[in-house]
Length: 148
Image (cartoon, rainbow, N blue to C red; front, side, top):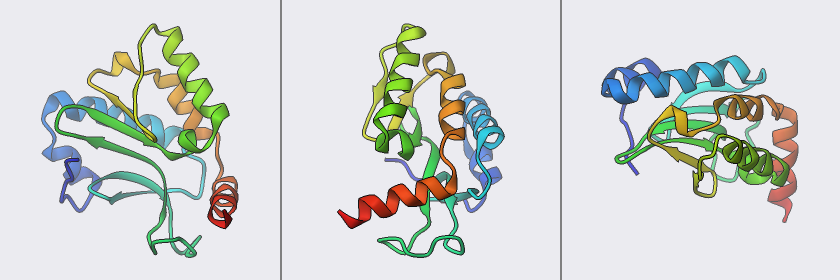
């Protein structure tokens, strides 16, 4: 995994080649427009991260903010990390249905959606999925999983 050492989102975007800057910026704008209140945009883990600040929820397993969504430019692809999709069968099924609708086989890992072109991901559905989980619901799910 390629990790940037950029300290700000703007520095991260500036270091990307144009063929990556435009798609990453498009996804960033989509996430910012759909992001429920309470999540914050930061640079964490070497990528653009949308997370619950420790001031809101400090009781994490690793002492780091809870990550909700992240966007990254990796060596051979770009990726959107959607932790709520990984945690929700309903959200995963909505995403898979959206890929089928655009006739694209998804390139997905546990929580990442890998792509090389924006046309190969269902942007509208991704925006809807970002909007789906409030900070309170995400924390409730995290605490439920943490108890197991």
